[in-house]
Length: 402
View 1 (cartoon, rainbow, N blue to C red):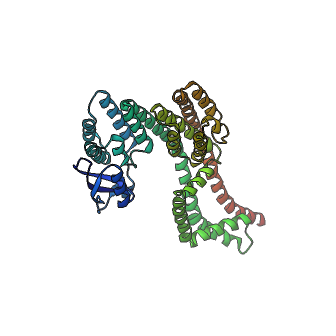
View 2: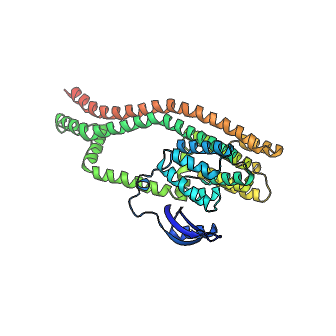
View 3: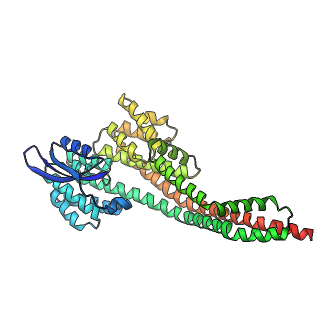
């Protein structure tokens, strides 16, 4: 997505100046026409170096939570929307959010709705955010909707942070293991291999020693091929997994890994339950809620199942029925959803499901670190043991011959 500035005329003949995020000038122009504006000029905002784009900077979750909560409080207190945005714009520490809030305020002053103004910044405001704001504007409960959005953002951030914390030590240990192995194989092993070969004086070396020396020689001689293969493989993996097919393959592979698959499913179910409940409580239709939630849960396998379920819902079937047939969704989800459909309290029931699975994720993530740490230590020990055995083996043989 690129940023485009525009000058347009609204339906009352007033000149409007603003900016919009879009994939191209044509797409930006089409969007302006849909908003009831007649574009005069549409051009890229800047041709200079964009550091935000270069380094992939984006607004922090904490900044978004603070903004959403403060906006909810100000609207609840009766402060006009434009004045609220101006106040928050001056207070936020995020330069990118400050810039976007200025554009959003100008769009609202030009006659745009709050949701439509947010929709022009998809990298910051997700479809869930935009649709819930739109529902809040239509029903007159925008402050309540914003509070729910802030809570949802906090829950997501909490889960991500716990997962990162649990993975930090194992990742560091695995990195150190890799560095030590490379150092031993490219620096230590060649020197020891020469000494062992000289001592053997032409005698055949043990198979393990020959294999380790062959690996060491290959790494020293063809290091550039190995480095190229790693970089090339990383680039290919990143590009492939950015496609729809690649993302599905990646999600399927991750869901086959023991322990990790449980975390992935629990996180996805918790997100589905909380987001779907929020959408329903905001008055969004069931089909729209399913479509938006499917894209937001971050797992293409569950997304495909929800999209298939949506087709049955469109034919008059309740959502709980196709989820009963799901091979991914735990049985408790359609059971609780069915209760909500019968009582008319889907949002309340699913919030309880979300809280249950969020607690489950916390417990599983906490145990993940204790499971992975000894595994990493064993891997490191095996690598060092192989190198040690390849050196000790020929020395032992020589001592026996003597």
